[in-house]
Length: 208
Ligand code: TYD
Image (cartoon, rainbow, N blue to C red; front, side):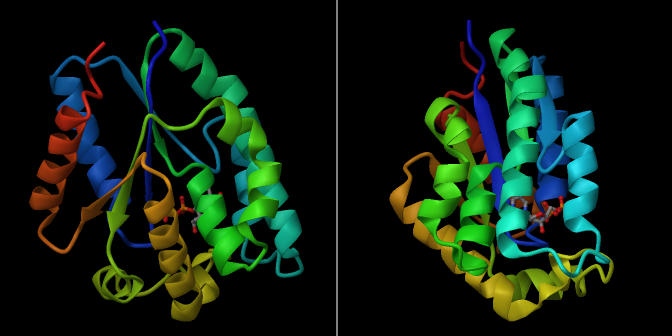
């Protein structure tokens, strides 16, 4: 029995970490066999690549290099962590996946969806998500909620105009890919958590 891959996506400050924590508690209470992992990262080599990508000192990194490093971290993470877990029947919950690359590098950096899709074809063609939960909150509201960006993170430093483009990228992707389910995050954390749990039930995520 092959497990399902469920991805969480969203802009900076969308409350992804909190929601993933609450969801993990819910799944654990229900006895679901799952792993929680993240991108970029989730394996030793991918975590090393993550440090290079996010290091605020790497100011000379060009957009293509950035996109290729995310794709490199992704394929290693898939082969080392995600695929073995799916093959052993586990539910895999992944904090970000290739839609992040399409929104951040494809749309916001301006590399284009085709370039980014091409370098991620291993993931897109072979391991599409069963469901993608897009935490839908505008970057303006998210920034207000988070009280500003992390000064040392290369991507978070980019400012509101960049993050607006990311958001618009996600909205375009949502209109195009049926596995993306937008969850309105304008309510309380508890309300958002309930919407996510309902989605898991509606889409039969934890059923065999
Ligand atoms: P992280 O600290 O994990 O951010 P968050 O908590 O918002 O998920 O850093 C991941 C950063 O990398 C985040 O700014 C989004 C960005 N990113 C891309 O630009 N492209 C990608 O393909 C992925 C996976 C992440």
